[in-house]
Length: 448
Image (cartoon, rainbow, N blue to C red):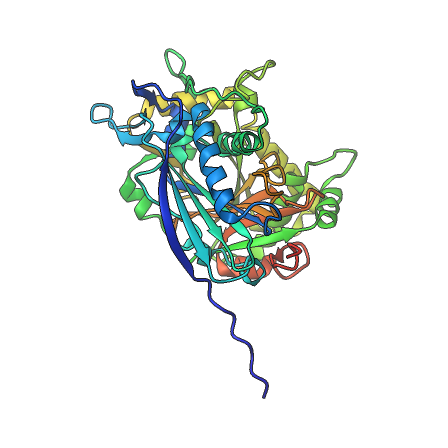
């Protein structure tokens, strides 16, 4: 009997830590009070992974030095990212002290070549190997070099600093500064999302939102262990789903079609005691609150809400993809308007201080899955002077979570294909992998 080769384990040696501060900093620290929508997003780490082939020009030592120098310049523009976040004793709410404490940069070496990594299973790199999580630093970066000369950069942000739109602008600015280009966005750090006077909101928010404590979050009901996976979805599959989801002259978006497909598929993974199923979508409120001039397009902070739709298991099983896509579209449309965000801001105002979350996210609304679309998040554009990445995606070190998540990003190929980072129950992952849409990510798919 032929011996099966044993897959080598990823081992990482940490070699150096540096604290990088902005080069131009006022000696008087500025305090940024979090907006109501910042309070809604809460404080937990968000990580972005970027993997690069071996640079053909500079050595890894020169590249790391260049990254640090350019980071210091980038923090001049994004000074809250070099601050610290503390709990205000009077308001009992977190605030950002912009005192230039600095961002943490950790350097490491991995024993494997890039093409030997298990890109499908995100659990391993998240467990203290490629991701550094130190609660003292709202921004931390780990630069890891591999046996082949390849490089990965992982960026971990405290969610209080902002959302995906804010982090994408920061990363893009850094890549522009390191290449000697002017930054394409002048960041707005005002955090001036204010409630109405008096605050007022639609009563249905009381049914979908709730005030909670850290104890509630720690006790989120988790029936099964969640696994973290990375998938590749080719453009052909996306186009096919969009065609199936569009009917009677109505063209559904790619994310609506994808959501309809996942929603229809996931019901076969559900336990028989459930009769209904929820799906949620993260919605960016910048263009909704910014009006015709979209004056909030460069706003750095959190401007997110979650739209939820609900359907019976029977409907999801029997209805066509286009019928389910109609339900998806209607659900998302409820949150893609100014009135929804103004109501949400006012609801939070009426329930401060404390943590506020969607009941579904807390696992209190029955089975659910949240889809996050990062179609405009920079991936192939993130060139730090040694070429574009082969992969850019998002991950989470959070272990307790009340719903499944799918985070979509454009693939680094720039050909319309996607990468999807997933937090799923094992049974749902197995069912999604049964056909050709969700392809487990491999070094071959990344052309490594």
